Each structure stands twice: as C-alpha cells, then as structure tokens.
Image (cartoon, rainbow over all chains, first blue to last red; front, side, top):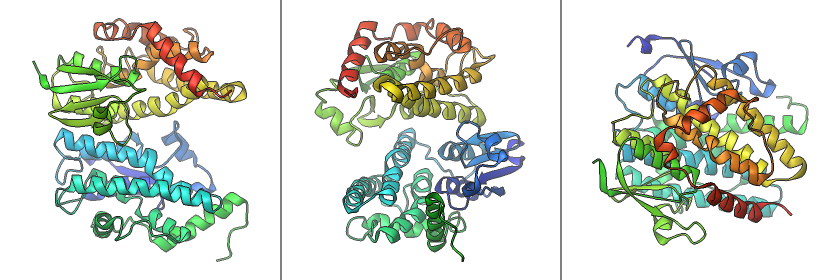
Length: 235
Length: 223
C-alpha cells in the first residue's frame, strides 16, 4: 500500500501509441500521474537520456525513485503494483500467454508492417506493404473471435492487456488510411474489429488519451518534412 | 509429479530457445514428453500448433499450445508455483523482463548479424555485439546471477545462450569478442551457470551445434 502511494510520472509524448499504453493502464487503475511531455522531434532531452539510457525511448514510468521502461513491461508492472480491480491481465495463465503472444506479434510484426506502408516508395512497394499488413489484420480478426468469447473486448467485459496493446495503434492506423487512401479496417474484411475499435476508443480510460486523427496527421506531416529537411509549415 | 501426460514440449535439442523451457521444467521437477522436431521438414503438428511463426519451442498443456520461449517461461512459473523463477516484487520482475527483452532483441540481433555477415557489415555488427555485452557486464557487476539471487532464475535462463551457444556463434561466424579480461563478470557468471546440474545435464553436444550453425551460415551468408 505504501508502494502505491508514491508519486507517479509518465515520460512520453501525446502522439506515441506506446506511451498511450502506460496512460490507459494508469487510468484503468484510477492512478493519478504527472505527464511529462517530451518534444522528441527537437531531440532527446537530458531527462529522457537519464531515465532510459539503454534505449533512449518513451514511455518511461517513474514510480517514486524507480524507472520502468518498455510499454508492455510498464503495463504489467502497473497491473502488479495496483492489483485492485479492474485487472488488466487475465488471471488464467493460458489466457495471459495468448494475450502476451499477440501483443508481441503486434510489436514485432504488425506495427512495423503498418509503418512500411508509410515508407513505401512507388505503387508496387505500397501494394506489397498493404497486402502484408492486411494478412496480419486477418489474423487479428480471427484472434479477436477466439479471445473475446462473445464479449465486447479481447479482455472480456472490460478492456484488458491485449485491447490496450492493439488499440493504442488505432490513431496511427487511421492516419495511414488517410494518407494511403485505403480502408484498412473494413466491414468486409474485419467486421468484428471495426466495432471493437469504436468501443475501445469510447472507453473511459482511453478517450482522453487517444489522439485526434487530424492532429496526428498534421503531426506526421511535420515530422516527414523535418526528415526531408524542409522548413516547417507556416500554420 | 506435476505435469504428466498432458504436457508436451515440441523443440529441438540444439535450439537455445527450446533449452530454456527444458531448464525451467526440470528446475521445477515437472514431467513432460519431449517431441523432437525436424526444422527442415516441419511436422504438421508444429504447423498446426504454431501457424503464425511455425517455430519451436511450443509447450502443449492439456492440448493448448503456448508459444514463444519467454512467454512459455512465464506460463510455467504461473502454473507451477514451486521453485519460482521470476522474482516476487513487481519492480524486480520489470527489471528481469526488461533485460530479457534486451538480450533477445539487441544482443541476439547484433550477434546474428556478426555471425552471418562479412566485411564492413560484420565489423559494424561486432561493434554492436560488444556494446550490448558491455551493458550486460555493467548489470552483472557485484551480482552472482542476473537476478541477484544465489539460485538462477528467469533472467539467467534467458541469458543462458550467452554462456554456451555464443562461443559456437563466434567460432562458426569467425569472430571473437567474449574474453574473460574484457568481460570478467559475464565470465564469472558463465562459469557458475555452467556448474548448475540442471544446466550441464541439458546442453547439446558441441559438434551438433557446430554442425547446425555451419549449415545455417552456409545457407544465409552472402557470397
């Protein structure tokens, strides 16, 4: 109980899906925290480099004098330190293993394939990247059917670990749809996930930290022009 | 004994990832059936149980597959509570998970590249491997084991490939970075890790590893 009274801070950015995971988890547990915003496009701050010297990335959870890095590890930490309901991870070891498996898949394979769509040069590369990405969505649609057992979320009646791990990418998925001109989540191919996405984004723990798609798209343009070495837009 | 007839492990004796699961099961005294897989001709059982990645190890408990070695280790620890392998406190668990991910992502990736590449690309990969090892060396400072305990745990098990497989990766890959003078803590940890009976009794013979790594290098090395 003493542990859960210590000051909590999250080092991150409003645009990072990984930072969102930490914030959603804290919101689920009704834990107050200070959000320390990094301006990564201006370079990595001393504060970030000290807090995460190994990877130099956000999010970092600061709990008292402890630093916890890597978003999924942070989510598990939050679930363990504040074990009161709602639970983020399922109590059954097999369900936990399935959720961890798909979360690792999302981070190792699926999200990188989404980024490939944005980085693709030429129509052929773009088509190939989208095809690869959509294969992953088909797997996730099936996994959702298996995990949910007729309930609204991967986690059951409430959002859980896998909902958080996946749902955090919805903002960037919508931006990718806008910039590529292709509907990636569709009624035809991913009917269950489309509905899940609406429910997830409306969840009380999510709605205030899910970035606005237009704002994210503007941000993406700004980063892209910075990368190309252009002057920032006047607006 | 715990486990019994409804616990199977699909894997290969040479796989560092399979051996992690073997060590965990044996440390906890859990009985299981080992099914040796041929990774060149993958069985329909493996492809059914792990259709996404088609890889070993796969633990099958009561007919349900559990995939990915680190996930299997957590599953084993949550299902069979005797002789815990993960630490108890949330912060220590986060620490163990963080460094396990680092070992499997950063160090493994760099080592694989150092193994498979040649020329300048190999030089760069070797530098990355050394950097990763230096970070681990720092973490081991004043500790006997990665977990800081007298007995080996999750992070030692995950790091286990460094104590044994790594030397063959170097040998077949044609590079050498692990020297006791440069990495005294890792060297000391390796020596005590390889004295744990469960570990020494469950290591593939050197010639088997040389053969497998040799075959992989021939297949993947750029001409």
